[in-house]
Image (cartoon, rainbow, N blue to C red; front, top):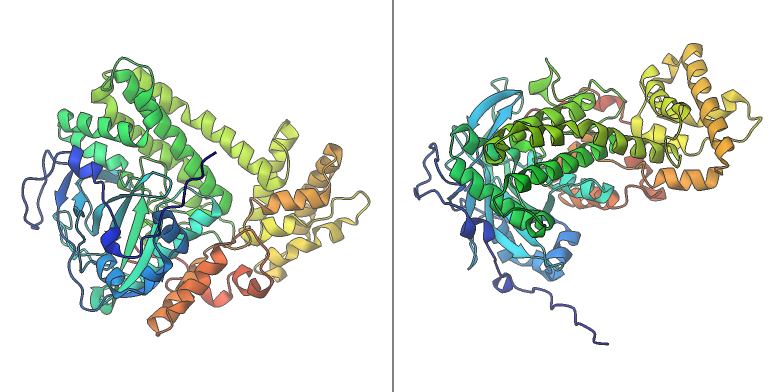
Length: 544
């Protein structure tokens, strides 16, 4: 038996090796300029990040350092901040911005593209998987339109923290390697009310196996550029869906293979949205250009977690009037977005039936996944009976009776005593901690809650499920700590005020979202009343 030695950690960025499959295999924009323009017949444009005045590392992900094989000492090397702030390029990098289109708020928007994201290149991680390193906020690209391609500290802190918090929750997501302050100032009008101000700039390095979106396919289909559409789709299947690429079929560019590819994307997307609902996450801007082909949560802009359970809540100020992207519509919006992807792939498949069949499978697949997820949240083995399904729907109705914190409620439900003979008022007493306005809880509310909990307790007794085992199982799927908007805002305030270590302090809490952390109860509390309407703590703009 031979033992393979662990790879030597990368102690210098000069040791970083790039294997840039995307730019090597796909057509490039022949124009090397950085002027804003329509890019035709190309999957990307080569463009270099804009150097910044004084790059300084504010935070990094230890887990992504480990994944990429980086020595921990790299974080203190000034070269690291220079590279991942956009000021220095390494040998082997091939910086570029993707060309894509998209439907925004239900309307076709034409060419969009990476307006403030520049991929530096691809590396191979410790597991042998390719990872793209992408800077967000590193300056203008041909796709920036009227924008400057930069990012401010507050939005960058939110992106960095949420990428990692979601991963620790077990939600499919892009990751974040680092957060670098640029030393420069950026003009932003956060509320779009004419009161623009200079703010500190920052750059996040995002990490994912691929940053390809639904919109990458839509742009070529919309232009009738079927050759480039086919080239892109073949590349994505071969690199990111290897089981399909190696499977039996009538060839690499076969209609059957494209239909199978779409069916896989349908399932990945349903899985992702189901996980959002499990933890109470609202993406806020589910445009097709923000939908990952791998089913990863991508582009953390005006996102939010439900504090009080409200399926109609959206964190996006731009979406406040119509609430297209509110919490409760996310499954339906995902299905609509998948339909747009199916339309884009139709020229490759040549007939609607296989794509429609895959799309028709979305609802039953999602409902099956939702059923498994809700059973786990309730501590049940499955939603086996109609009564079980009524419990799953009933708990959501209880959450809506009065302003109730979703995260706290689920954790408190795990400690409800389900033994026979418990006084109903005593049984529901643990749930009181989840109410935002205890004085508004009427006898009617208490009665409805008690009726649900009595049915729930009876079902658990009938199944012979002990409270200790149930509570442990529930706490493994119902987080105690989520990245509430007000917590992120407190970290932003601290970092802006000269205490960037607050970012790492919050990240450290989010590393163990399902564990009791007795010295960190502050982070598990319901949203304080002062945060109800404060900017950054409730709704956010796309500039947030």
